[in-house]
Amino acid sequence: MSLTYAILSVLVTAPSSGYDLAKRFNPSVEGSVGFFWSASFQQIYRELNRLEEKGSLQAESVQQENRPDKRIYAVTALGKQQLCQWITESEEMAPIKDDLLVKFYAGHLVPCQTMVEKLEAHRRQHLQRLAIYQEIKHQHFKNPQALSKALKFQYMTLLRGIHYETGWLAWCDEIMLLLK
Image (cartoon, rainbow, N blue to C red; front, side, top):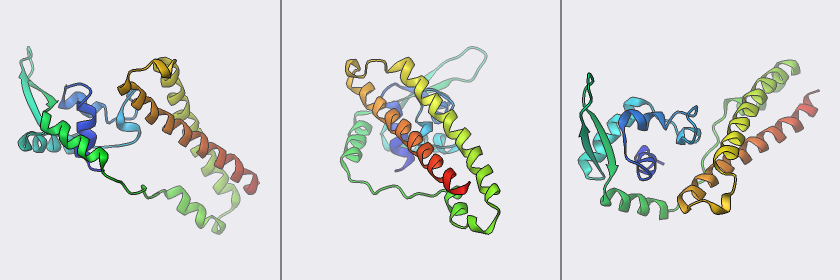
């Protein structure tokens, strides 16, 4: 997937400034795409300019006191059409690129305790992420059937994150038994 469609996907729900958009690519921001897609401020601003030049976005300048004007970006009809077309296209299964798995593949070369320690550190991180997801679910998605169509689809991405973390933790528990 390209950053183009990640940006259009975020902006189609609500116009925003480049700065606010970039915050939505940070996984520490609740409800952000940063949990499953990352981009730097520079990448985002470069892409915003490109999308505006192509007519996929339009920007409105908003004056601010004691600050430079900010630009609020909104998806145009052309941008929405491009996003809809992209959604209908088929996609490949995402490849796994995981340093920890490569280390486990060759883990027989080091003491088992080294791998146990690595696994315990990662387990804590995955537990933290799962807790964040569960809190988002509790705060914003108490009754999934009553959600708007747009929010149901956001909820589906949250569920994927929850399933990923619980699956990872189950794998962790299973291999921890093999290491001890």
